[in-house]
Each structure stands twice: as C-alpha cells, then as structure tokens.
Length: 83
Image (cartoon, rainbow, N blue to C red; front, side, top):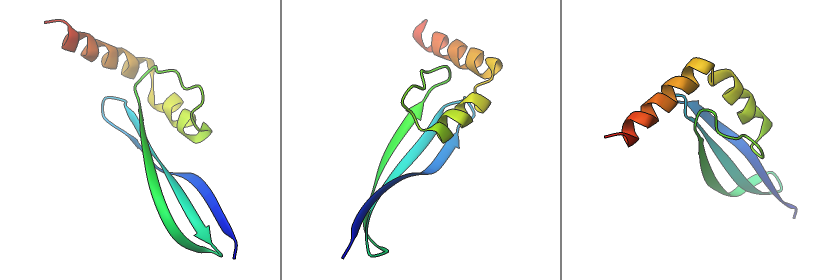
C-alpha cells in the first residue's frame, strides 16, 4: 500500500477583463486509485505581482496582460472608486 499526494494546476481561465483564475487540485492516491481530491482557487488581477505562483500560470498571465489590458483594468478600477 503506497499513498501519494500530488498537486496539479487543472484549470486556468482568463476573463474578458484580464483576471486570471486558476485551480489547484490536490489528489491523494493509493496504488494508482484516487482516494480523495480537494481544490484551491486563486485569482490574479492584471499587473499583480506573480512571485510564488506556478510557472505555467505566470506564463499565461504574461501573455494575457498586455499593456492595453492592464490599462483598461486599472481604468475600470479607478471608475469604481471614484463616485
């Protein structure tokens, strides 16, 4: 009987306003059979610091977050704050 625990990024989504959402699945396996699975979700906003995030998520952020996307996101946030 061999128990293993693995964590994988099983889902990455980019919304129309540039927010990147990703889901990590943690799987407990016994001799190749999955015993359990839990999820942890994270969201990243355009121009957010990417230190410590998985490399494949960072790569997608770097492609999705063009200067235009960042500027549009920041402008939308400024509108929300200013009455």
